[in-house]
Every structure is written in structure tokens, then in C-alpha cells.
Length: 272
Image (cartoon, rainbow, N blue to C red; front, side, top):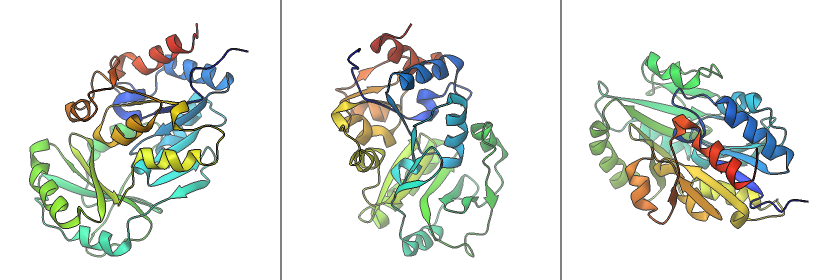
């Protein structure tokens, strides 16, 4: 029997496993299918909600895959059963709703156990959720609850508009939350010590292999811990420059638009 170089493939989605249209390519589906048939575990690790990821897994046809979602705040199996959870405390969430920022340039969102909530209509966000149909509900955050919050996140059209907000968040919430960019225009707040890497470590507590047996791929600052903890981590050519700066020791592969992750896996695992 062929000796596998790794027992699990751990991959980010947007900018990494998904193509430039934020959907999974046919070649990627084929390679992930063949890997699973060889007994390799597929673990998708993303800032997205599990509803989104379920639809992607449906396309792959994976039978044993696991979802690390909201940057590590939740881990679920293929059927959506909760394996691990780490929510923001409700009192912090309610404080985050009140922080000052320019609402003409930035929108505030939450992923919570009962859905995705936003403070105003932003139709262009739908392009990221074509497959799943997962969509937001517009709410007044001065009257909204803080229960079961995976993350609170802020989206701007221009990254410069988030600089002042990031400074405010780090000053007032930096000691009790995790603050990270999932994309250059999306700043996210999770509970303290939440990360994809931490969630992966929790998941592997119940497996017969460890972090060193994982190969991981990412493109954003929210991938730092996961890429650093895995046995082998790779950054995308199209990665956020801040990720490349944070992990200069990691090898760079091609672009997500060219399905570079699948090409690299096919070569590494000898899949024709």
C-alpha cells in the first residue's frame, strides 16, 4: 500500500481552494475526491459559516470531511453536528455593537447560531455565496441580541477605511478578543485565542494523527496559526502580503484562479 505523505489536507477557501469566482473548480473536486478515496482526510478551514461550506462539500462529494468555520469559532462534521465551539461572550458582543465607526464606509456583521446579520443592505456580498444561497438579514444592532456569536466582522470597500477602526478595536478589545483580517477589506473579531490552528488542534485530539501529519494552504492573515502549526504549510501567490511577511519561511505556490492547491496536491500525492 502506498505510503501517504500526509494524513490530512487542511485548506482555506476564498483565495485558496476556491477560484476567482469564489466557486470550487472541477479539477479541484476531482483531486479531493481521489485523495479521500486514498484515505486522506479533507478539512476545510474558513472564515465562512458552515451553511456555506456544506454546499461546497456537497459539490466535492466528500464523505468524511470536516468544517472549521468562522476562523475557528466552530468545528462541525459533514452532517453539521457540532464538534467544537468557542463563542464571543455576549457582553463583549453588545459592546462591539456600540463602537464608533463611519457607517457610510463600513458595515458591521455577525455570524451567530441563528444566522448572518448585517446593519445595511449590501447586495454585492451575494457573489460570495452563489452556491449556498446563504444570505444576511438586515437588523438594527442597537436592538439585536449577542447570543451564540461566532464572530463580529466589519467590511469596507477601501482597506484604508478600516485602519482607524482596527486601532480602536485593538486598544479597547485587544486583551479579550482575537482581531484579524480574513481579507484586506474584512476585519474580524472572535473570542480570545480563537484561530483556525487552535480549532485544528482541538479536532485532532480525537484522531490517531497530529498536526505534523497535516498539509495546509492559505492566503490570509487568519491562516497564520494553521499554516505555522501544520506539518507543512503553503501560501498562495495571491496571498495577502501581510501573511507572506508573517510567515516568510513558508513556500509559495501558484494562484487560486489556476487551482494551484489541487495541482500541488496531485503532484505531491502522485495522482494522475
